[in-house]
Structures are given as structure tokens and as C-alpha cells.
Length: 62
Image 1 (cartoon, rainbow, N blue to C red):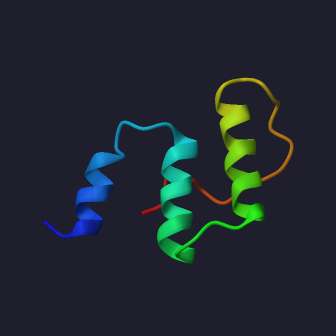
Image 2 (tube, one colour):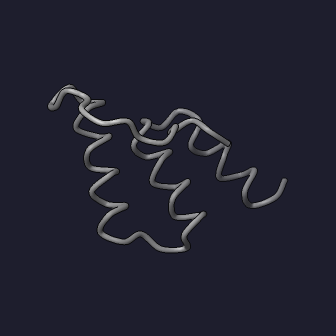
């Protein structure tokens, strides 16, 4: 199993914001403030602390 496959298996049961943060980190190699703001926004929505107000890229894409 490749490292990417291992990560994919490891995050299967994690929240959407966590999956999205791993996806961004793998794509960008590091997270900038825009990425962190997006992750925070997703987490707030997922935990029903904020209503969705903008469209974001899919957090479940492989």
C-alpha cells in the first residue's frame, strides 16, 4: 500500500474538515492562511456553528 493509500484509509472516518485539510496539504505541500480560513469555515459548518454561505470545492473528492 502506498503512503497516499495509507493516508486515504486513515482519514476515512475523520470529519469533512479534516479530510479537506489533508487534501489541501497534499496538493499545496503546506497550508497558507486562505487554506486555514477555509478549513475553519468547513469545521464551523460541520459542527453547526455557522450556516453555509458560500460554495466551496468538494471535500470528498479523491
